[in-house]
Length: 134
Image (cartoon, rainbow, N blue to C red; front, side, top):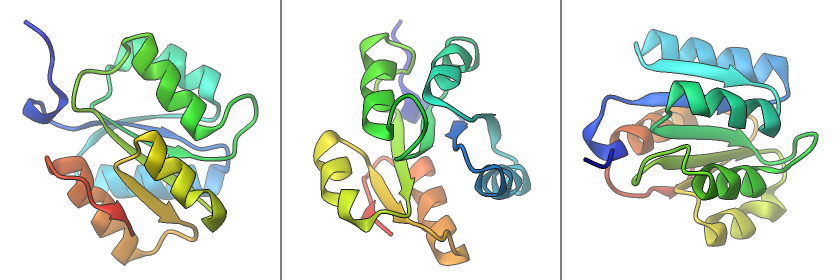
């Protein structure tokens, strides 16, 4: 039977090269008792995804090695995520919003991440509908 991300408890992979942002997102997920793992690069995320099996991915857009769009494509191409996996892009670059949403991200969040934006992220992770922007 094929795995479907929407029928499972959330397992969130956070991919962020800024340690403060990664720690902040990790602390939020821990507070919400959401199973999660973190990686600082796209390459590390690919290796971790093979073991962690995420149902949602929160990724920075601009990272060393590969950007968030390239990471999403690699995760899907290598079948490291189940159908229905939620993809959320967090970026300080508002000009990449359209590129991310056209590429298939479920939600785009502009940095800095606020409590209101975090609430939208959690709704997206737990929902079967795309939120698009926060």
